[in-house]
Length: 156
Image (tube, rainbow, N blue to C red; front, side):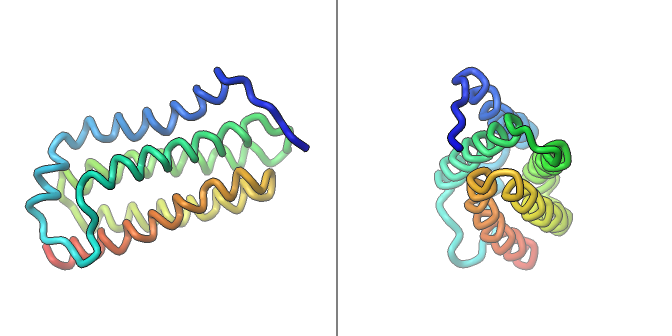
């Protein structure tokens, strides 16, 4: 069954994760300086990769969110609660890591975030496979981010 979305609804759904990411970055205005100064593990990407990757991931999250929000499933509210929880954890990570430079606390937040995104992915897939699949790149990126966070925590 193919569903069509109104462009306005889709734009609002995509705007939510983008706004969360932007708001979080406002609480960490020193990201470039901190990233330049910290000792990084091997495979650390150049700084320009992060905003590109996160923008793509936030757009995918927003599309998945729109699919679930538009669903008639009786399980959608549980799935959406998990989605909102992962957005809150996502919001927390940047200021904890960059502004407070609490790398181990950030690691705990990231592991919780990964677990909640995994649960969200499963819940979304039960409602709509496409919505769940749209979160897989996010899980992969969070796995890589956990490696980077752990490396920074150990090296600094």
